[in-house]
Length: 467
Ligand SMILES: Cc1ncc(COP(=O)(O)O)c(C=O)c1O
Image 1: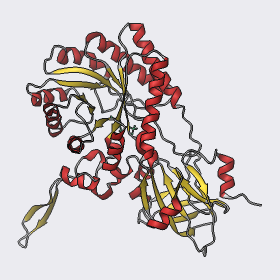
Image 2 (image 1 turned 90 degrees about the vertical axis):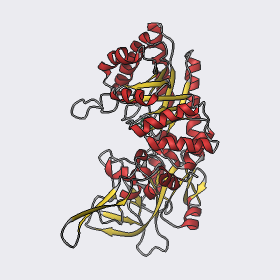
Image 3 (image 1 turned 180 degrees about the horizontal axis):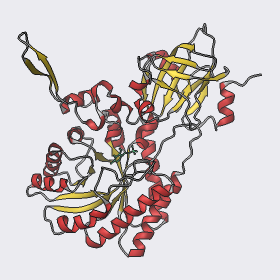
Image 4 (image 1 turned 120 degrees about the vertical axis):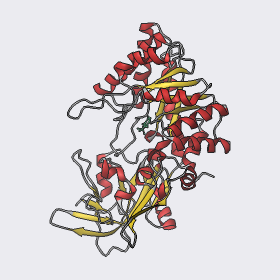
C-alpha cells in the first residue's frame, strides 16, 4: 500500500503544528477553514490573518524583556515595525495597536505617519527611525516632523554626505541622529562592504570631525543591519561584535549616544521543519551587549530592532487552484495554477525564496513530485524542488476528479505585495517615475510629452487603504 500525502507529512514533520491542522480532511490555518474561504471567494486570493501580527510582536517583546530581566540589563527594549515590509493600512494599524515604534525607508513613509497620526493611531512620543537614502524631499519631511512636535524622530545617516544636507534643511532645529555602520556582506566568493551605511573604519573620525560639538545634531543611535538575517553563525556574531565595539568606542566620546539598533532579520518559518531558537538568540544578544559594556564600564544601551518579515510574514498566504496537470516527459509532472507565481510571490522567482506550500484538500491521496507552473507566458514562472532539498511533493489525483486540487503558499505576508507592485504600490514606497512618450510628428520631427507624472503620495495611499 502506498503512503498518502497525510502520511508523508505526518512522518516527516511534527504535524499538526502551529497554524496548520486538518479538519474534515481539509487544511486549516490558525483554526480557519480554508475550504470555507475558497467556497466563499473562489480562487485565486491572498489573505492576511491580522491576529498573527500581534502575536509576533508580543513574542519578541516578551523574550527580550525576559532576557533583560534575567541578565540584570539596565537598558530597555524597543520594538520598531519596518513599514516597507507591508505598508497596507490594515497591517500597520494592527501593529500600532501593539504600540510599536516605526522605522521608515523613504519620503512617502513620512506622509504615511502623518496620516496615521491624523487617524489617532500614532502619537508624537513614539520613536520614528528614519532609514534609507535621504533624498532632499525625505529630509525636509523629517524636519517637518520635528517642527510638528514629534519628539523621538531619529535620522539614521546612511552616508557622511547626508549630514550636510540634513543640516541645510534643519535650520534652527536640533535633530537627533543615528549612524548606520556598513556591514561586510555575508561572503559568497569574497567579502564586500554594503553600500548601505558608513564604513566602520571611518565612523569615529567622522563623529569627531563633524558631529562632536555640532549644535544642530545630537548623536543617539548606532545602527547596523545584517541583511542575511540574525543567525547563530560566525559571520553574524562577527558583524554583531564589530558593531558593538564601535558602539563602545563612540560612547566613550559621546554622552548622548544610548541606543543600539540591530535592524531587522529575524527569520520566519519557510518550511514545516523550520527550527530557530529565538529565546537563545535573544539571550545571547542581550548578554553579549551587557558583558561588553560592563567590561568597558559604560552604561547598557537601549536595544532597538526593526523586524519586518518576522512581524508580518507568517500572517499572509495565497491560495490557488490547479487548472491542469501535465506530464512533459516520464519524470516531469506539472501542476498549472490559476495565476502567476512571478506576479504574486516574486521572491520565489527572483531570490529563490521558499514558502510553505501545502495542499488544502486531497490529503488522503498518494503524492508525487511536481513542478508548479503559472499561467504567464514566462519560462521562469514556476516553483519547484531546490538543491536545499525542499521537495515539492503534492497529492496526485485523476484528471477527471470532480473537485480541483487547491494549493496554498503560506507565510507570504512580507514584501511580496510591494515587490510585485500589487495594484500599483512600490517597494519602499518609491514612486513610479514620470512616463514620457517620444514620437515623431507627420513631418518627422521628434515630439515628446508626459503620459503620466510621478506617482503621488495620495495615489499610493488610496491603494494602501489610507483615508
Ligand atoms: C534598515 C532595515 N531595517 C529593517 C529591515 C527589515 O528586515 P527584515 O524584514 O528582514 O526584518 C530592513 C529590510 O530591508 C532594512 O533595510
